[in-house]
Amino acid sequence: MAAARVIRVGILVYPGCLPSAAVGAADVFRIANTLAELQPARQRLRFELDWLTARSEPLLSVGGLSFACQPVLQGSLPDVLLLPGIYHATVAELETVLADCGAELQALREVGPELPWIAAACSGTFLAAAAGLLDGHRATTSWWLSPYFRSRFPGVDLLADQLMVQDGGLLTSGGITSYFDLSLHLIGHFGGIDLRQQTARVLVMDAQRASQAPYVARAMMAGEGHVLIERARSWLSKRLAESWTLPELAAHCNTSPRTLLRRFHTVQGCTPIQYVQQLRVERARGLLEATALSLQDITLRCGYEDVSTFSKVFKRWAQLTPREYRSRFGLRV
Image 1 (tube, helix red, strand yellow):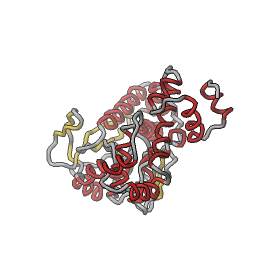
Image 2 (tube, helix red, strand yellow; image 1 turned 135 degrees about the vertical axis):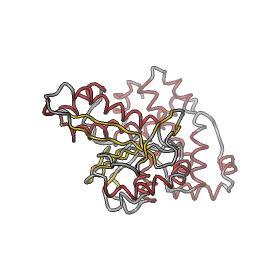
Image 3 (cartoon, helix red, strand yellow; image 1 turned 120 degrees about the vertical axis):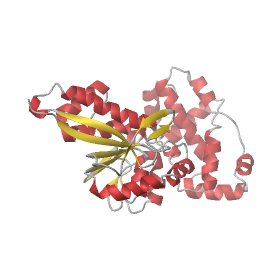
Image 4 (cartoon, helix red, strand yellow; image 1 turned 180 degrees about the horizontal axis):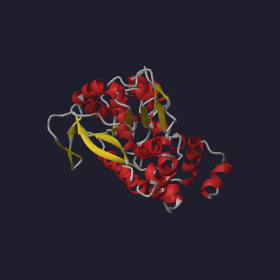
């Protein structure tokens, strides 16, 4: 019997990476291994998984999980180097992690040109871009980070609406769970479309997802790095069900209301009040689609007391006609 073809997949682990993306991707390949055993002998393959590190210590603890790693700069290179996303809540936190990734960036610059495949998931694309691997290439990243990515890496052709982009041996994917799509794409490349489809069925997911556009919430998209605006956005996002005043927000940002309004509009294209209305509409949209809460309860959770007033705000910012609004949510308008 012919031996199964071996594909080595190295998953780079680093402080600040998203553990679920590392472990989740590994699980997808393990499922594919099980299914590959059912294929005819001549078609069989096996994905060998290794945790890799650019650091001197082989045992890394990330998010409460411990990874026994091998050095990425020693021994033979993998067929695929997978970069998990970065765990962060704000652009500032993302930058903090990147600033601590000197060893990883140096390693990527050394081995990147020699690797057959580099696959970066979600904000892991920032790591690949910071190492210069994406310059002059097409790529994607998590939709809410796209404006910031463009400002930081102007040499990358960012296709922000795409869930996944392949440019030669460079593979990038969008939002947090897109590591599923990235892993399935690689499984299909090496193992064929049937193995990819079978693995997707076991995962109970669509193997043909192509766009992030249906998931985009414009109000949540990161701006172009203004520290003052990031501070304002963070403060506002925590007070969607509360009342607040512009002087309170300006005081939190250590600036005047006039300056805040001017800079906020420059970055966001709207006022703080309009921004909060957009966030409240996104929250309402999620509650309407995923819960059985009454419209009154949803209205209160979004910082409004009057259902009629909030319905008008919702229709305006959600860009729905009255007919679409009624049809989608079964509500009287």
